[in-house]
Amino acid sequence: MLSRVVIAFGIFAVLSGHASAAAAWEKTISSSARGIFPNPRPMRATYQFGWNEVVAATAEINFSVVNGHLELVGTGQTSGVVRALWKFDVQHRATADPATLRPLLMHQVDALRSKTVTTDLVFSATGVTRIRSDTKTKKPPTPKSFDFPGLLDLHSALLCLRSQPLTDGAVQRIVVYPATNAYLATVTVAKHESVKVGAGTYKAIKLDLQLSKVNKQRELEQHKKFSQASVWISDDADRLLLRIEARVFIGTVFAELQSVQFASEKH
Image (cartoon, rainbow, N blue to C red):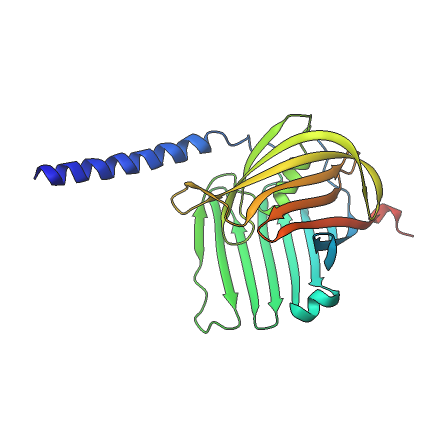
């Protein structure tokens, strides 16, 4: 009898500890209110992606306002020698509310040599519902939900971050759901500096990024493949995403802006 009481007390203590830990980190999340910086203007941008400065993929991003929503449409593919080894094509579409910058919908198709994976996310005030399917699985996809108020996708996370003042030393802690899992992103404004990318030389804001995985119990776990990243956005009226460098288990991967054209500048 005594042993059962001890075991029960131990289980209670462990569960209580987990609940406290979860509550503690959740209290550090930044306000979900958007900043005062204006929304991006419609544009088309191209990027290169690579590993240890070797170009491995390219992408085109189009940002516009469609049916009153902020919409990002992107296509990407591996290139060169890398494509011969790993064929990968991606189509991505995401929409957000222009007033609150909250995410609405995300649709992504990943085409690999062996199968095609389709992911759909539907966001609400309480969290997200995900439907994920692939051409190798015969069973119909099962919707899965993750409840967390204020959840963002990648598109809305960038919109929210760029809307903030971004003064040196400022910290933003947000929860992002890119496709299949939630992550706590801690973004620190490191400094303001000049940076050169394929599209030119820009005055830039450097952000340092750290990620922790949020499990189903809403506890934080160390990201197994990601160490840290640096992000540069232009320090001007557009606040363009200029470059990303991420330290992962295979080395340093990067994304870099190669060209940008705004809708107002088209002839």
